[in-house]
Image (cartoon, rainbow, N blue to C red; front, side, top):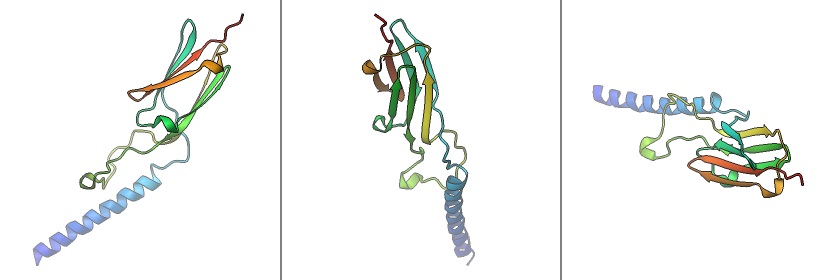
Length: 136
């Protein structure tokens, strides 16, 4: 009888852990506010170069709005969490990776040529190349 009671308590404990995990995920870690990805910005001889840390973000979900003196980067990152049935999370121990909608605005000290902007993604970093406007 003791083994049956112990087994039932372990099952209930597991179910309670799942409920607590879902509650903490929704109530404490879900936010409607946007987060700001980290950037490095460089002024080169002929262009402005921006490196944006967007690990885990699919490039098709990134929006870039370029104006002569402003760049707006926005998109969304899904929460990284285990999805394998055997490794399904039952408790959040630490959650430091930002997720959800993001937005970052960068203003330039000089005009850039909005027609010649290029962007590429390597190893989770988005590189944006903004040629300087030529004043001929």
